[in-house]
Image 1: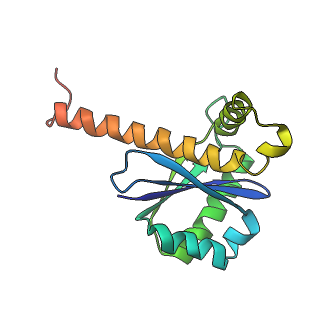
Image 2: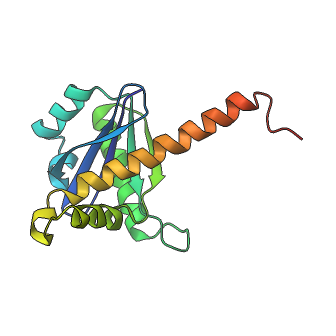
Length: 151
């Protein structure tokens, strides 16, 4: 199943996609959040090109494990996007994905200026990869224990 992940920010939205087997996440692009919300031609093209079966939204969880005001905003925006695309959606903890994306880019020699457009799509890719790995682990557990955990 192909999944499209969106890391929605105030100004920009990072977009990543999984391979058709749902094993590997790949960064796609960054669009202005306003473009995504308006279901612009650029965003429609991403949907048409990748034909995802699921939209995954990064939900900002605080370090204490709670949803703050930004999470509420993301949920509202995600609802609008899901309505436009007519695709099911899920949410996944995106805590520190942008921090990790910046660290990776810095380690690869990028300046703060050159990171600006890349951070969001790398963060979306990290979010999606974490989701894929979490779901792969839960599938593996189900395969090992088809009737539930062993007692």
